[in-house]
Length: 193
Image 1: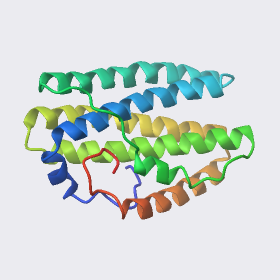
Image 2 (image 1 turned 180 degrees about the horizontal axis):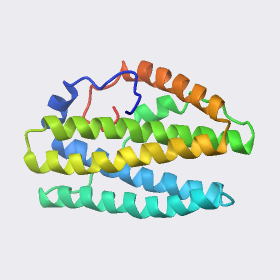
Image 3 (image 1 turned 60 degrees about the vertical axis):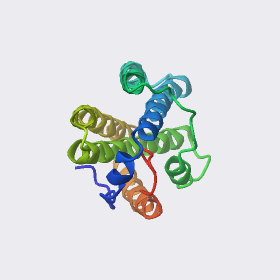
Image 4 (image 1 turned 90 degrees about the vertical axis):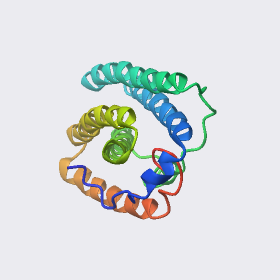
């Protein structure tokens, strides 16, 4: 369904199991960044009314996810740690060249967003199936369903605003690039890394 070319190494869950506090902190910031991304689409592309409407709904959903994760951190007696660089996102953002038409920039940003959501969904599925903590496993199952909807929404908008054949080709190229990026990741307790 997600089209990812390289699945996450299942051993990543063992790393997460030993570092629940770290994964929750990283996850909280991923939700915050997803909120910021949705806001940036509104600010950067206000003339795309249907996109703006969906992004408003997404802002509400993503910030509610942030609160859910933050509540899990608090419930375990921890505090939200500091944000750290997301090596995965920094690597994939190098795929498309800067510049191009406004439409091209929009399509590229939508494809990046779709990919990040797809990988998050895949990681949440793995956590929901493999975590020994039943509460967290259930939590990640519920989030996985939501992330799948986000991935398809962003990809649909890219196909709507760009030339479908060209968008699908770029999507496949981006997926192949992401698979290469993933070969060097899955070694730490972060949602994407």
